[in-house]
Length: 276
Ligand code: 3PY
Ligand code: MG
View 1 (cartoon, helix red, strand yellow):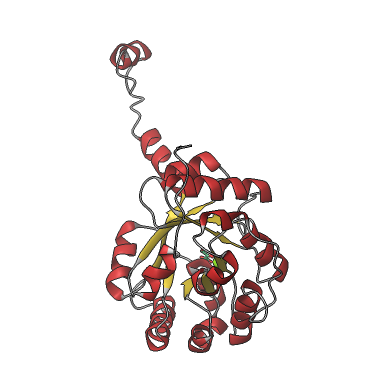
View 2: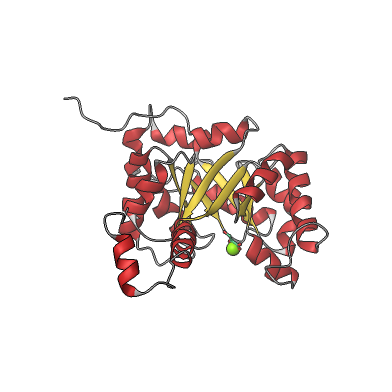
């Protein structure tokens, strides 16, 4: 029976782009809303990350966000709360095609990420299948070996110092800089960023380590202008803001554009018939 369905994929498009040196652009889901996820996915992002670290999303809502992202045409990824076996295992089984793992500070941490994401004999992920296996061409278990997006977060001074060893770890596809935690670790304000700051120096050191190891560098960006600059600099795995930020920014702009200066009667007359 023909239906709108979902076509099967052969390779993970995110990993393909990153391995071919191309930028792959996405955003963050903090609203815990499958409807927001589906709407955002239709805009054209390569991927959307369900943020399980810093949003109150529950596990079942997370699965529904994955479904919604898929339906909207993007690749579902998640940021797990910590570099832990149980989180990694369950989130992959729930259908993420890759993970962003926070606070990876050493090559050993990076090795543990990969070890938890791979099945035996290459790792220790237990085999119970994944709900996403139905959307993969061929065998999911072997597919994961080359196709899961393994993205480690570099967001501390220690991680910047170890960036080359972290990125050189077999199985790591790329890194993702968390600008806020990096600022805190450097002992500076999260606003003390940009050219000439220690923060930017650290970012450029991570980019250099990525180029040296042939892996993808990434960063969370707050504006399209910054994201465009980072593409020109050679960053690849780039997130722009989040669903929450898009909502508050647009709502604030509209709210601030309201003209409260007229009388109530005048405003009502002007608004009539032109609400949308
Ligand atoms: C940070 O800025 O620390 C982040 O984790 C952004 O995703
Ligand atoms: Mg962080």
